[in-house]
Length: 336
Image (cartoon, rainbow, N blue to C red; front, side, top):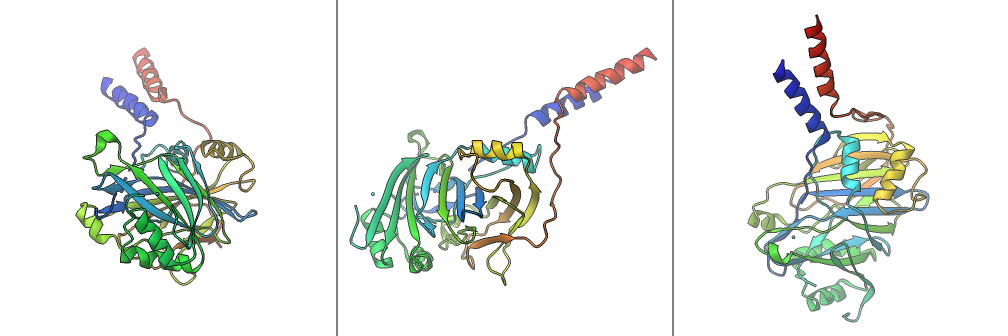
């Protein structure tokens, strides 16, 4: 009878200690790529505001990495707590383990920071382990000049990637992070979660990237996982366009309780009045290939508002309960 009791006790311990994991990028003429990504996208339909929370993960052989993030309107940048990521993982997959990382689909570049004619520096800020600069460029040529002056490796692939955004007068956020002094031999890089908030007509994930297949091969990376926690007033679907489906799969989709809504906003360091009065959370998982994507992922309200996946329990089980139950059964049997 000792063995089953031990197994039940171990089961209780594993329930209490779910495994969690995380992820890393580089400098000029050195391979640098986005690795696994986990992002939180909070859509405020009434205010037409998207809050994009990214947890950074890059791989690079250089000592630092710079990258560009497009934004359809002037962005607001703030540090966001990391606590929201394991919190949402616990809600959607209790008590399973998760892997994560982060971004807005972005262009990884070199090192970065003055301003040539045609480029306006809107804001400079250091936060969450990043040096950030919000730029407004009059032309692709002016942006290229700025990037070159600040030691960003603006390759033909990056130019091709950026052109559609520049034509639509999007802002560019230039960022860089550096490896810790004692981690120069490690290709991984990470920073704290960063919140990027911007006005938009439709919630989106900038999925497009420059072709990074050669850099991925140089770093020995074959695949990666993109995980998106999408929060809105209802269940939403993500697609490249009305005629082209996205490869991401909806794994879980349920309304959140008022308590969960309040806790999530606190973890994200956002005001309790942010977003809709009631939250609906959907989790998407995509095996994000290194290559050229057909477009960005746009989200729209789903025609099917049915729930997806098993909902979490409204009560929790004490991890010691299996042990107590087993001991009680053993005592009862001996009494007989």
